[in-house]
Image (cartoon, rainbow, N blue to C red):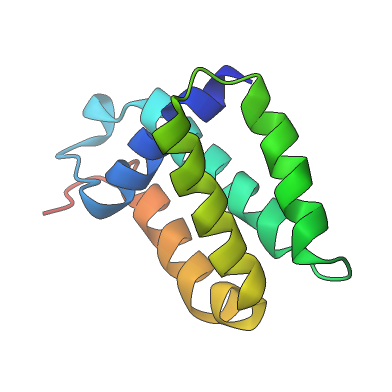
Length: 109
């Protein structure tokens, strides 16, 4: 569960994921980015209540090295995603996937 400790780094990488060539690609950054999306997918999973998802994510975060403020941020983000699942799958997740893939692209400016 160590990847949870870098969840916020993954979020940061989504906004500034630029690599000049394939050799400079950091697979650790890409993995953290994809793990962040997996966590958000847990929050957006249809068929159960948001409270259930928050409990599940809260249990996952107990094993992490995140401080209370970071955990709070993740929980608020999870609740927002759960509250608007359709927008997450239609607009947000595709953008996150593109941003993660940019970590591995060559010649990205």
